Length: 85
Image (cartoon, rainbow, N blue to C red; front, side, top):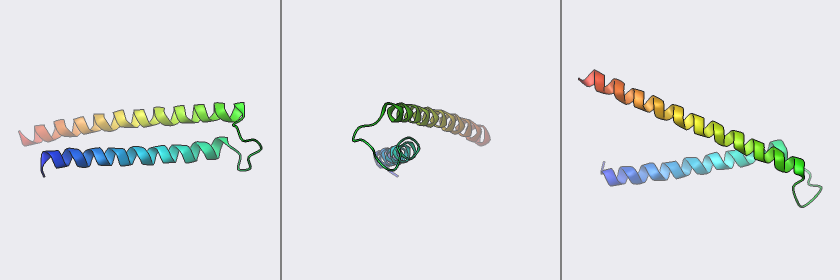
């Protein structure tokens, strides 16, 4: 595969995965923090705090998973190099 096509495909996949993660985060945090029947047009202080914490936890987990997957990929690359030598 052409390297430019590969980079383009990788970028498109990353955008798609980020959009999916963002949508999952919105749905999960909304379900957890905002009651199904709205009483007011604006978020209450408790709802806003809950959403802030939920989003922060979601983002922290996403970052940790990304680091772990990167580490695993590096280990796989090293193992493949050793096996091919």
